[in-house]
Length: 429
Ligand SMILES: *Cc1c(COP(=O)(O)O)cnc(C)c1O
Image (cartoon, rainbow, N blue to C red; front, side):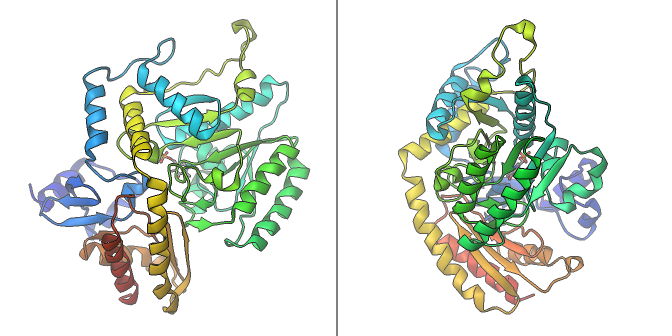
């Protein structure tokens, strides 16, 4: 098989995610045959640096031997079993580890990020119902992203994904996101938040946020002071706080979880993506004993949380997650990343002098170059994607926002190459 053969066979039958399929009349798909570490290899023998961690999931590189071995061992032991009424070792061990790491008491599993959001929203709504209160409104940040299923889309605020489905969505309102990473903007946004909470707290189930970094909304970053303040305000007004750490969790923002940087404990924390280092689909909602106990009673009171997915707590996924946590335990990942984050910040400096660059920013293992002066119709992100691909780097800008979000196993030399390629692509626009 060559790239060309693969593309032909693909387009006969596949409908790709988040894609206008007609684009592929001109823009070739990239068929990947294998991968190792940070490199992806296509059918014609080209290789590409995976500078977006395969849509933000891959943290320890592809074909990692340790994770692979753990999954294979699990595959020969127990591939799957129903989790209602039954249990298994990987899910029990993983839950204990997550309890220690997140400081939250109970783990409820699903199998992808959006489903974890649905679980958290339903649990929060149902919690208040079990406590005798009917609330049906959610609060989220402007420009937020929490996934594509209808509940998750409802609390998101990216028009490109949401607008079309408006009539199908549940009720949510938005509060301003701090405009930048400064303390001043954090403070301003907290004042706005308190106004909204004061007015709506009796109807609000929960406030949901992406802590410190808003991913799909354009890698917007804000000060931990906002996170801390928002958590305190939700406590003051009796509204749940959901920390959606699906993208930010597992070291991406410079700490194991972004919430640690604000020293807060949410009522719910949703985890996926890096949870299995990008090896298998798995997600989990961590929550408190207070939430758990609101559902805990005799069956005949009908307060149980009757939610499930076929692959809830899949043993292979749990084994991948355990292997991922072992890599964090064995290696000083978070500290090693600090050096890489500093290096990325240094690399961003030279972009500031370019006239079409609006801002550069960095949080942990996410570096951003935001361009300005382009109409969406120009599809500047696509031009950057194509230019970078020619130079063996996979960048996938969000519109005019170019970001580097590499697997943590990338070296300084490889990072250097990624930023060189990004620079050339921008200069060449
Ligand atoms: C990716 C993402 C989701 C959705 O996860 P999926 O597995 O793609 O459904 C939710 N929230 C955030 C912050 C994400 O980045």
